[in-house]
Image (cartoon, rainbow, N blue to C red; front, side, top):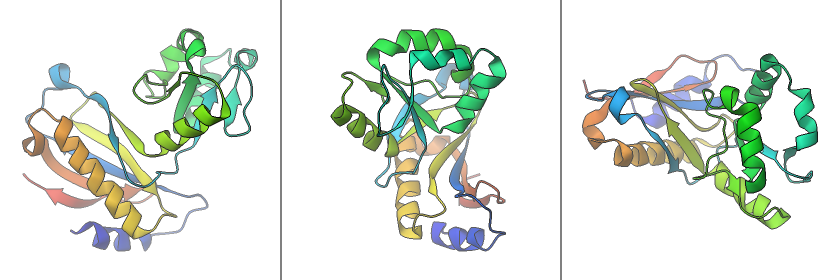
Length: 205
């Protein structure tokens, strides 16, 4: 099924009270997760609308800010998990990273929420740097897997079909570049909104 036709079908399903994420599900083949697991990023042309939280030494008007003073709010694992689920990604100013890793690493790591040196660490804490990082975060998608299936956010339901299609195609193209055997590692590709059934857009069994 063409991506455009799949989006038309998915948009027919029951409306929800939130802006659903368009998930891209890539099932792999001829892929050894133990030896070839991925941990990288691919770029997209249109901001995915992800909600970002920031670990900063002082609060910023540009982004929801978490300072060291706020750490006392997250004594329990359930509180850390709640924070992790509240945002799609986190950024951090470089001097905070060691403290963030110590406090939140055991929860954020498995949930793929730790700020990454590849996309997420702000070298200098000022409004210009924070704004630039937020723009960058909107146009990168993290690829990290522990199994032979990868789920990636391609955008939000409120975005136009044209922009979603371009994002999906960019992710698939970028993913093929980082897979060890490229196209030969892709079994099939499906898309779905958060609360809908998935539809196949690429199949190579």
